[in-house]
Amino acid sequence: MIIGLYFVAGFVFLLVGADLLVRGGSRLAINFGISPLVVGLTIVAYGTSAPELAVTVLANVNDNADIAVGNIIGSNITNLLLVLGLSALVTPLVTPQSLLFRSGLLVVLLSFGMWGLALDGSISQLEGIGLLLGSILYTILVIWTGKQHTPEEDPATREILSEVAEIAEIAPKQKATLSAVLWSFFLIVSGIVILAGSSSLLIDSAEKIALAFKVDELFIGLTLVALGTSLPEGATAVVAAFKNERHIVIGNIIGSNIFNILLILGTTGAIDPHGVLISPGAMRVDLPIMCLITTITWLLFFTGSQITRIEAITLLILYGLYFCYLLIEAKYPDFLPIYTTSCLYAFGPVLGAYLLYNIYSHHQGSKNA
Image 1 (tube, rainbow, N blue to C red):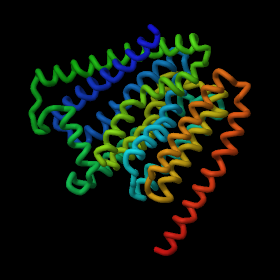
Image 2: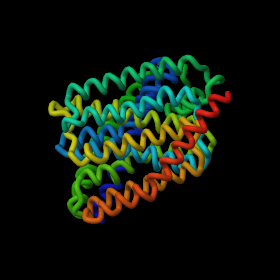
Image 3: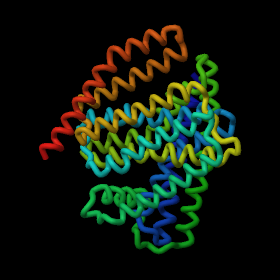
Image 4: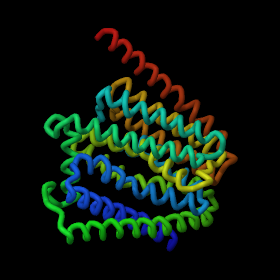
């Protein structure tokens, strides 16, 4: 019970630390005349990834690579199945084909790229540096794309500007004062300190939970840690769905999954000279599942440019099946072959037929157009 409370407290303080870091960085940047759009696409975007980054880096440095890797894989799967499923259940999610070809396909390629890099049992420091440079390049491209639209032309740009204004709580033209700069630095430093402390508390309690329930750390990383670090993006996406801001939902989920691989995995690998070790279980099962789920989700979007409520229910069922798979694997491995076979034969053909039908319908629609 006490360990569980420590675990929850670690997550709460993670969110507090990330919020302070984002607020301080945004205020400081805007005080020095940096465009709110650039602030939103860099400081705010990177700052909201701070919980995952802090937990993953610290876990890997402390030789808890399974928690680190499990957090990245689990967060991506949670975003695509649970967060996307819940959001689409609220309102069907429509997205333009241009976004699917650009960012959606990038998520698929990055997922398979991560799996490919992990085939030798690790993500090396050099590979981590390459991924980190990729995140910088991606950020530059996003900023350049965002500057092509005015707030009146693009609702996503308008949302970014309003979010930054709300976070910074200052006028964009306000001049920097010494007290304002010092206060911004105080928020930044406080956020970093709280992030470090809460990450350590969370990882320590996660280890003890794994020991108490006699499960491995990969299971904890894929489930509890991944669920917790996905909470900010999940809450944002579901609230945006209720407000019918569908573009925010899709952009939030796609951006989060891209940053998880490029920024978080890249930074974690670049910092540690030994890179990030990938367990045989993650390489054999969880990474292929992440790639499969990413591809299925992209195909669902691609064939109809939307996720319907029926497809949302399908995604939620898939998440439930995956969670049960992890639980059975951890506690009742003897039943795993029966469970896996049952799922494949009961659910696989139906999903496969549905995807093929959608692809055929999309092809026929394109020919008629």
